[in-house]
Image (cartoon, rainbow, N blue to C red; front, top):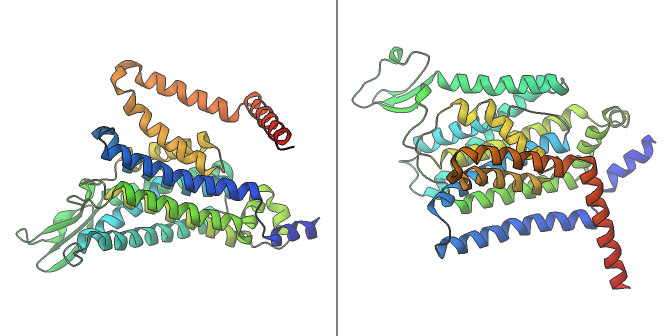
Amino acid sequence: MAKVSLKRLQKGKTGEKGSRDKFITLLLVVAVYGIVQLLVKTGHVSSLIQGLLVPMCVYSLVAIGLNLCVGFLGELSLGHAGFMCVGAFTGAFVSKVLRDSIGNDLVLFLVALLAGVAMAALFGFLIAIPVLRLKGDYLAIVTLAFGEIIKNIINVLYIAKDSNGYHAAFSDAKSMQLDEESTVWLINGAKGINRIANLSNFTIGIVLILLALIIVYNLVDSRSGRAIMAIRDNRIAAESVGLPITQYKLMTFTLSAAIAGAGGVLYAHNLSTVTATPTNFGYNMSILILVFVVLGGIGSLRGSMIAAVLLTLLPEVLRGMKDYRMLIYSIVLIAMMLFNWAPKSIAFRKQLAAKWKKQKTQEEA
């Protein structure tokens, strides 16, 4: 059995159906971008919806990263809001420091993006070393604690620049003895980072989503990806055929954190001020991202993106209904959960798929 399992890992061929699904997902993202751009130019999209385009890209991007960890690695993480926070503050800090040195907005954003992704990946790697020895609920609790720790550290971090150079302190900004006339705050504790350059847009968000999809799909289709899914399905069997489990877990968790960090950079540069509040990067944000993954289907990147878009749009679309808005939102959540995960719903969808396939075969014959 061990030899057979190892042979399957070494085979390295992707099924025709899997390749078609991946191509459809990429094509769907491009088609949505084209349709939205056309609607915006013709004036059929309200300013409210236009303001949600970048957040939808952010949530889709972070959901892709979390789905890599939950769906393909099989480890439950509740700390992706923390990685998003690291990416957001690192990217905003770098862009604010280099704003006068780099005149081109696109180049400035790329530099900030690389810095945010690298820092989020570093934190993901460092956290993964001790955390991935845990399993199940214990892993979820520790990753959740990491997200809260990151948020609290940033809230007491002060970094400023004056005529004497850069200064940093924790908790007490007065101890830095700044020259008030020339002081420029880079990170101002709980007030966060303000006057951030507005560098994010819908086009950049779509490009980042496509890059994330291509990276994840290439990883999943590779030998490493098959090894990761083998670890998810049966850790003992994977270990018995000589797979380096720790190495693959570290690699997956780091990549997942890096994608979340990219979402954080995109998020920060869509705002003039970013703060590490519970609403932005707290426990609720981690749960919301997990909801996107679960409702869209664990292991389904396309489903995660669709869930992120729908659940971001829905509260705003229903805003005119006042008291009934959150009630309808809750009903939609329950309906989506039942549709995706109820045994009878799964059986019904399989029956429909079988009938459609049989009908198609008969027509071709």
